[in-house]
Length: 182
Image 1 (cartoon, helix red, strand yellow):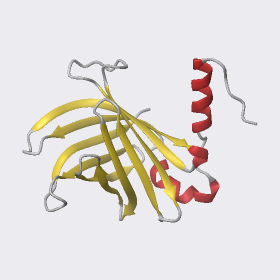
Image 2 (tube, one colour; image 1 turned 90 degrees about the horizontal axis):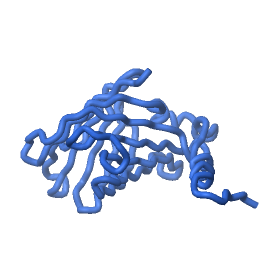
Image 3 (spheres, helix red, strand yellow; image 1 turned 90 degrees about the vertical axis):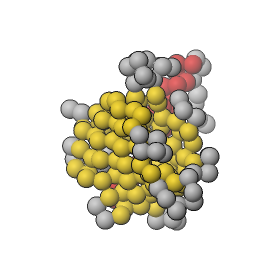
Image 4 (cartoon, helix red, strand yellow; image 1 turned 120 degrees about the vertical axis):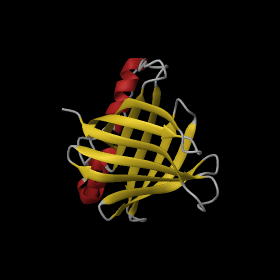
C-alpha cells in the first residue's frame, strides 16, 4: 500500500519525492543522457521576437533541469522576470517541460506548459548530428521547432522557430544562450 501524507506541505514533499529521481534509469541510461547532460541550473540570456522580426523581449532567466519518473525522463522549469524585473511567484514568467524517452518510438516525447502564458506544446525530440531537435505543435495550430545547439558541458544555445502556415515559412520566435551555474 502506498502511504500518503495528511497535510498540504507534507503532501507536496511526498509528491515531489515520488517524481524526482537521482539519475537515469539503467535500462535507458544512454538515451536519457541526451537531455540528462543538462541536469542542473543554467543562467540564461533570453530574446523573443514577433512574427515581423522585431525584438520584443530581452531579459535574463534561469533554466533548471532534473531527472524524474524513476530516471526515465527529464523535467525542466524556466523562469523569467516580468517587465518590472520581478521573479516573485505569481509575477514572473514560468513554464515547465516534461520529457521522457519512448523506446517504442526511439525518440523523446515532450510537453511544454507555459503556466504564465497559457501555452501548451507537444513535441517529439531526437538527436540530429551534434544538435537536439524537437518538433511538434501548439494548441493554436502553429508548428514549433526547437533546437539545442553548440552544446558543451558549461554552455548551450537554444532556438525556437514557429510556422503559422503549416511549415511553408518559419520565423525565429525565441533564442536563448545558457551558461551552467556554479
